[in-house]
Length: 89
Image (tube, rainbow, N blue to C red; front, side):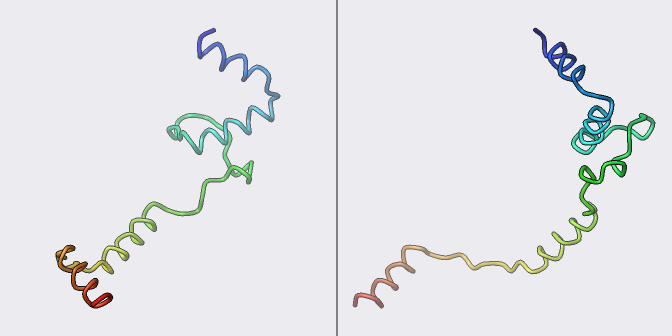
């Protein structure tokens, strides 16, 4: 059985309301163009997209990026040797 046949058999088992919920949920995962006619997710509050806006996320990452400070290059062997000397004498 091909993938499309499996998908078709699964979708045929759905009632009209279940199919509408599936389309609303699938629309969040795989958005379609504005010209396509599908049920709005607001009809199904449990499937509404997160309220986070991509611009809010980008602004948050920019704020985090501004907090980042350069770290000096460390000579790990000498740092370990000095720590070992301090600790164990």
